Figure (cartoon, helix red, strand yellow):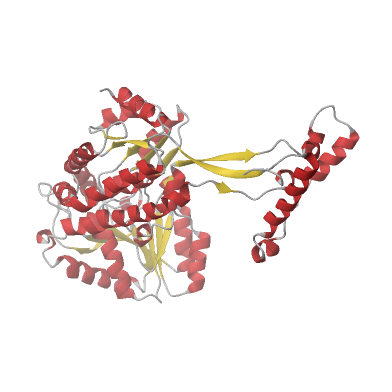
Length: 498
């Protein structure tokens, strides 16, 4: 079956209405949950072969939270799928305005190689829950995990509903020529631009989860040892190949020695003195990415503050490296996406804020401090997809808040209800009866001064129930509307139905 035929097959299946049925959505989510519960060894083994990441770590990072989110989705699916009745205006006092939920249709999900399970499954959950069909294009770079996903999904799902397309740039390019109803892509900013350009040809909405240079600001009033430990975990997790990883640290000259000492201690505690031999230290995904990072190491003029081991291309090993860097250093040009951590020295918090503001908006920003005023300034004066205070990465683990980028780090969001909304079209609906025609008679030609006067009264200002009344007596507006509707029904012989 060609890619065009696959897309059209899914579109025809979507048109049958089967994928949008709540029973179908639940059934598919339960299938996905069963795969994650019973076949996680197959998936974590694939990740190990691709990234040499410990399988237990992968379960915690990529599988466990997805199972929890499926349960959250199942628990709320029926409620989130219901129409939402909207507040009435003066001109719609006798009508029913509402937001009707409908699936978008056929979705293309293009996932990255660095978290090759979760970056498929986490967006897949709301795609299914919202009632869509989906074509998944996993990364060819994480080939073992892509093969595992293809095998498990082909065994459990009908391709007219969910299909995995393996391959490389050519297959992705061919898919992007097709018309989809939504595209979600996670990966590099450069490819994000290509995806968005292709989507524009069909006016297809996109969700782009990209990256950027995620800054970490460490202030003197923080617990430095704990802060360094948390930064070290987030930075060298997956050998630095994490879109939310701390990209660089900003701190003062006075505090820098303590920060470096804390990082050094954490690295040794995590991986031992022979880091290359640690089972907990992952590898670079491939030689092309190894060569990119090694080239930057060869070109940097920064002072090395810590390094344990030497790069090994055959083993795809690059050790943790901490650099005392200048803003113009090669490692500060683009997202590092590797185990190198530059430290930028500033005079204080004001300069740290200014430094972040001068760069592109990152996917995440991190601040370590006990000062509530500094926290508020950080939130107000910097822009990023998300923020964690006094830790790193952890905001992505909360499925009740959105995950997404802003500006150069992406657009759109998902996780939990926010993902359900992303892959749902919220259709504006107004239901009216056939009575009370004289109330809006002024809209009809021919116009007159009397009609214009009436039109100004009902459209020239917003008249509603005061907020305090709605808060204290939430049912009062509907009681009033009911009385009015009863009067109209009596007077005009009509009836009002929701």
